[in-house]
Length: 387
Image: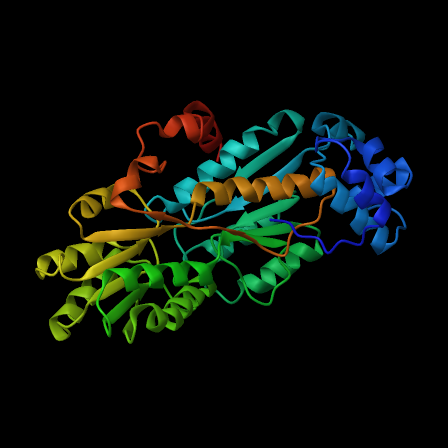
């Protein structure tokens, strides 16, 4: 979601009220901004000497009037030099990053004919191989990098190095505080936590006791979700409190062991919030302890193996972070910047959705019509075989 602070003149605002909103070209932008075509070109593509006020006005008009350059013509002007986008994300965390990958692939396919290509180099999981993969990618001739940041503190330095070399870094499904990345595309972690807290507050009694399971508090997004839930829960539950926060480090074995141990020593738990996709071991532990119907469970995201637990009533709701759209959006922002010169937003937060038993069929992860919305199978295959 882009937001601009204006900088326009009264003349532009008067002009834009006349007639219906429609897609325009560079000549139209020049006329509305009362500048030359060359000035528009310099503003949109970051060339030449132009005042910040004029640049902001031109970018505002281009955004609000849905300006989209002809990509093939633009690439011809640029000499048709190929633009490579590197992708470094985990192979899989219960299909979440499969969805992110499919969103990247589907969107990148739209731009193959004009010289945009994608180099996919996944790493096994957070904390295992991600630094090596990113360092390897930065040695390639790429113009942008889509990455899913984990908790390694060295990532910030790598991101800053990439940006200094004019490699635009877009984080998906997370962010890295204090670095110079171009933007981050994710579901707002504070909003995720508040939504989960409000849902939990509607499912349980006043003064309830709740436990949070998360991946790792060193991970920026996990920490912010946990903090947001904890702060909001007392408000929504009328005296309820979070009695423990448990890290499972994205390990199903660790989550099962820690949840089983928790239920043996603490029987008075009213609800659990799982802030990552690692909910199956928690469901299994609750079931084994005979508490699956009593302890209210709010989870994160969605994948097929969760459906039986929804149907049994163990999972009451899940905060869905739209991974497929995160991948799509990351590619769109990069292409808009590299080809059209549009600035990156400081961050791009997607509004989370709430998955319930009654609307599960509407989500692509469990829909039998997945291929009509997601990646085209033969294209996906050819893309991955090359890696």
